[in-house]
Structure formats: structure tokens, C-alpha cells
Image 1: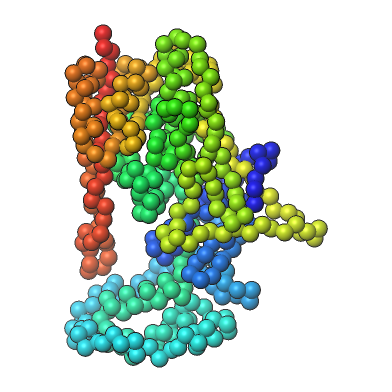
Image 2: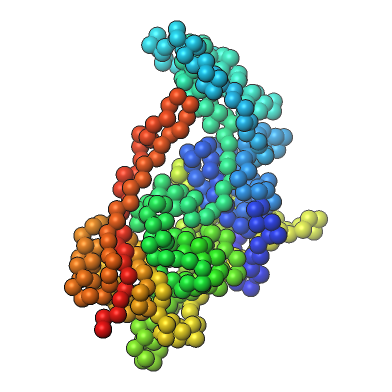
Length: 451
């Protein structure tokens, strides 16, 4: 389904905590096993397992709602689900030692003969309208080894079957943390291996706050631009600058569901144009074309010139089917999101020329840090903080040395963020066995007058 530019833009719903037709959501399937960005519409579908489920039931529901795949007369569908808060296992009742005292898994043999319930019988239960929980309980009842397992093994078995036969979908709001974690989990190269704690430090070290005009060099897909705009909240400008005639991709920034006011505050300007204004020269006409306009294709994917807005951790795509037009039912129209990344107006650039930018953030792993910084720092006001992210230490060390030699900045330091994730469960709290152990480096400092 293709959207023309003449259609009206999205207006945020009266209840910002609930979804609306055309908004972006992050679908967390089976507690992080698969993450999918999707645009809600009447004809959009998501593939869960071997079934395609419509996203229509998600429209109008609060963010953070749970859904479960249920079997209906017309096939599988997503139904609202409220997880139980009561402890239903012996782990939370303090009985694990007495229960597991005479149990262990040494005598269990994994020969695929313990389960007496066949696949044909499971399919028959589905056709009769059995819920996922009923299928899981039937599998447990027909397992010859379930009662012989330890409590931990029983819980793992139940959870594994629940994910297969009764998958749960959590509808999350796409904001800085959730978007960063989703991309880092599957496509870290698209965001330059930028971890969430590193992104938070970038925003803090650059002193990004309301009523600030932040100059951003974003080569991480638009994640940095969206994070800055989210923190500003429509009070201040985000100027996304770039080298050459083609702007960098900002696809990720379009997932944030920004309203018109915030989108108007996200502007683009080439470094050549900013420097020409800084030097008082006539403005050169640049070949700045917005090459990242987003479209809905017939299969429901959001396409762009550089990257896609969908992250699927199992390489399964979100599908969308066009809604047929008929005289008996109203036609469902999808509004186009508010356009962001417009070219910066001349009067705003003139203001930046007089006052300078009060903050600078650079995340350009593909460019040399010093070559970029020495061109951009003249655009900054005196005493303006800056923060530069890079995957490797040496480019930042060279940049720091040159800044010290030229007496261009003070208070510089190179930081290496460090984060450890913990699993917190009853009787088994420990650091996660697999985690991202490297978060890159950040060079921060304060620009001073060379005179």
C-alpha cells in the first residue's frame, strides 16, 4: 500500500499511552526471542511461528499490553492477555529444597519416546478450538518423564512448550532504549555497535537539554538524532549535518512516533552550507535531496534508500495486505507520518552563525575523528560541550592529542562505558552468561576560544 505525500499527516491520539492507526510499535515476541518493528493498520499482519496474525486488535490498546495467539473460527488471532501475578511454582514458595531433595536428571534419557501425544493429535486439538494453555497441559500430562525432572527442568520444559504453542506478544513503545536494544541485538553494525549505556553517556556529556540547539553528525541510521530529539521534547533544534551532497540515513528516527512539533525541530544542513554561513560567504546551492522518504510496500515493509525500519530477529517479515474497497464498509486510510529532516531555513542558520551551537555530538565510525572535528568545531560557541563516539580508541586518542596541541578544547577525557547484565530469578541470580562486553569509546570535552 503506497502513501502519497498529499495525504494528511498523523496526529497524535488524545491518549498518548494508547496506539493509533498508523503508529509504530515494537512487538516483543516470547520475551525477547524475536523483536519486530511494525506499523499498525487494519491490513497489517505479523508472522508468529507458522501463522500470520492481523495487527488490527492492537490498535487502540495501551502500550505495554500483552497478547496471546488464540485459535478462532477464522484462524489464529491475537487476543488481549493479562499475565498472572500469583506465583504458580514451588520456586516462590520456598519448597524447592524439599521437592528436589530426591530428584535429579541423571536417569533421564532423551530418546524422543517420552511424549505420547502425536502431532496429529495436537493439530486435532487446535481444530477443535483448544487454547495454547490446554495444549501445553496435555503435553505435560502425556510426558512420561515430566514428574521425574527437577523443578528447574519442569519450569524450562513448560516455558519451552508455551513459547511454541501459546506465544505471548508484548507491545512496547518504540523509544530510545527499546529501539537501541532491538538493533543492537540483531543488526549492531547499522548503529555502529552503539550500546544503550554509551548512548546515554553521549547525551549527558554533550549536555543535551531543553531549549538547546544540538549539532549532530549521525551515521548510525538516525538513532542518535531520534534520541536527541526525544530528550529535547520539541524545545530546541536538532541539526543533522553531513558531508557531501547526500544526507545520511534517518530511518530509525522515523520509528519514534514524533508529532509535528518535534518533527519540525529536526532539520538537516550540509556542513558546506554551515561553513559558508560561518565564513560570511554566499550560500552555495547543494544537491540536498531527501532520499529517505518512507513508503509502504504491498508486503507491509517500510522501504528506504539505505536501510529498513523493520528488525526481525528470526528473519521473518511483517506482512501487510491491502484492504479491499467496498461500498458496504468504509475504506481504511493510513495517514502518512509527519515528515522530519527538512532542510534548515536560512534564518535559523543565520542565528547559528551569530551564536554558534551550544552542543555537539558525533557518531561517525566510518569517518576520521580529527578530520571531522577540526572542520566542525568552528561552528560551536565558546564553552560548548562536545561528545564523540567511536568503536576504536586510537582515532579518539589522536583527536584528543591534536585538540590539546592546538589549545582548542579543555577538560577532555576518553571514557570506556562498561555494562554488566544480571539474570534475577528465584535461587538463580547471576550475571548473564552471554552479554555484549564492548561498548566503544567516548571523547568528551569543552571547546574554548583559540584567542
